Length: 120
Figure (cartoon, rainbow, N blue to C red):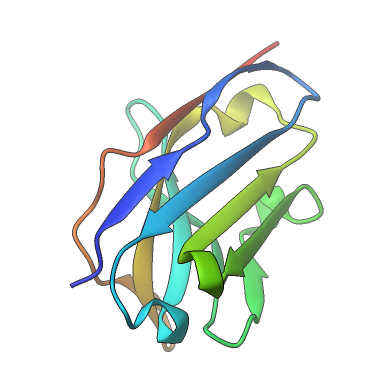
């Protein structure tokens, strides 16, 4: 079972940047596809970006060109670089191991997440 701890959130003005980190435990991290999710107040959790063990990435349309997901298998860490932030990006951000088929399915237990607040 992979355990995940998210960090790097904070308060930023619109147009600013943040880099989120997700530290994972577990020897099989490098083989796991990983995903970043977010949940805004009163809304359902949504998938934001995924990265396979081989480094292939995918993004929800609303963040394409602004967010970049990456991973450092030596550090058991996955990152989410967020640029040109908008107030609608405000949410608690979570990472999880995922299985990517016709849909993307989160597999692990959810961590506490990290709060990103974008002011206008």
